[in-house]
Length: 305
Ligand SMILES: Nc1ncnc2c1ncn2[C@@H]1O[C@H](COP(=O)(O)OP(=O)(O)OP(=O)(O)O)[C@@H](O)[C@H]1O
Ligand SMILES: O=P(O)(O)OC[C@@]1(O)O[C@H](CO)[C@@H](O)[C@@H]1O
Image (cartoon, rainbow, N blue to C red; front, side, top):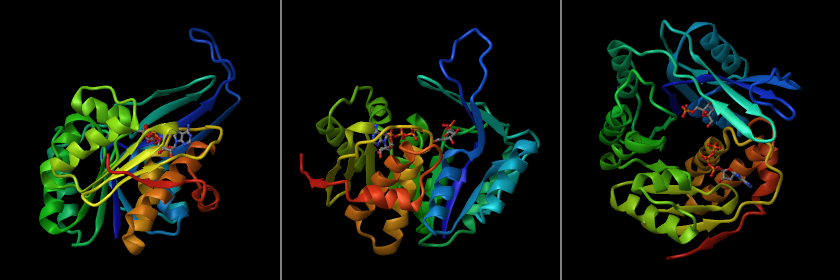
């Protein structure tokens, strides 16, 4: 089973405003609401690829009910822990530029944290657990590390998509996959990463620290995959970017959808990048058809630099 864990889910309130003017009354041209949070996005894309997963994490209030109802209607399994405060609403303002305002989210008690760790104890060897998104302010920064340690002991493959110390602290427990973008990778080493060579150089350092597989996405500049046997570079297809929300999550989902089938890293990487671009080129998350249409436009180059 694939589990996706979103500690701080959201309703993504997407509003489109032509020529948004700061400090004025602006009227929206269109508005949509989606269940959001990185793990939930991974579950939604997996579902579109015909792959079952169970979404876990914390959810509360009317906003949490919206998310649960949406996932239930889409036949996505979920097993959230209910908290008393409402799940956050994240505003995604689309105008000449994309602007995001992400909420803080509810506070999570020590008991509720223990409940989630118990859920992980009940998972089985060979399961995948995607830990994606920010850690709520009421929780300790090492919460993902605690979970990754459990995964390491139990033979569960941990996939981590987060940033900074929360990510760094997981490395000693050998996460199966991490997916920083090039800015996030640079932040880990306090450098700016502008080239594929630099992304490879710093990506290799993550392998030395214990990470098993690394995807560094570089938005329109392509992506790198590294593990002990491969260093691969993928171009991205040319197209009009309509929406970057969830593009990184789609890379993770696309990659997982393939790796669980045949374990082939090269084709999983290609499919992951196609999924990211398919989301970037559409209004919502990508569909299987959109991914398949882009897949062959992505060339994988083997490199050792
Ligand atoms: N300009 C672009 N052209 C083609 N594909 C793109 C473009 N920008 C993003 N993508 C696709 O989206 C993927 C993820 O993009 P990015 O590197 O910005 O990651 P991210 O910051 O994690 O994404 P997110 O916007 O979800 O936070 C890329 O690997 C690529 O497949
Ligand atoms: O605040 P976090 O947890 O870092 O990110 C949350 C979020 O921006 O990430 C997803 C896109 O990747 C959105 O669905 C969601 O609103």
